[in-house]
Image (tube, rainbow, N blue to C red; front, top):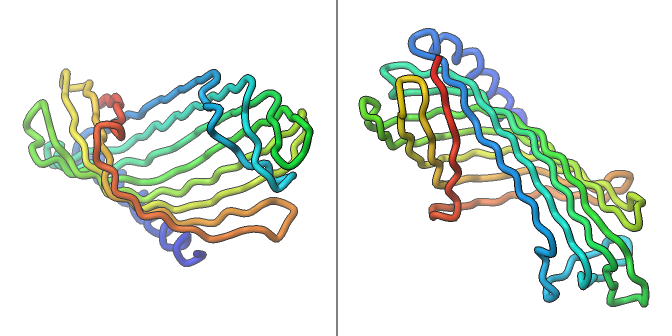
Length: 231
């Protein structure tokens, strides 16, 4: 796992050293996406969550609320008439889930439970456009990124567990963009291939595991829309 993190760090460093020279041959690009989701009573009565402090599942039968926010800006440069692009991307995310009166199956007690999360990440991606001269362009987008996540489990207002996740992702994405003008354009990412590897651990304990995930996702449900400006 340490070798994977080191390899990703070296790849990010080498691409960062190359990016300014590449951008000097063309134009700088600033872009990104924002996502905000809020739900109330979005968990059905048939769904359960596990309370680690009791070792048993709980059924949510009263009020549930969840909220998530993600901001993913990037800045980079393109050259050779827009056929190639390289960019440095950042990620900030937060999430919050609360449930009132969760009934634990293994006890006669009810709890107000919650889970808060924070995500920070950075990475590099390249983009190859097959038809750079057109307003509508199709592209491939390989990327490498690093992410760190922290979560808190809460019961009746008290933090009962803290978890940290560190991961590296290698991805090959597919997408398209449409140029509204020489400066403004919209991007459409529709998924692709990805390999995620990392480690999670419970703070103040010896509990932790390495993990890996391979994913292929190419469907309308995975579409992500963003905005870019050239300068």
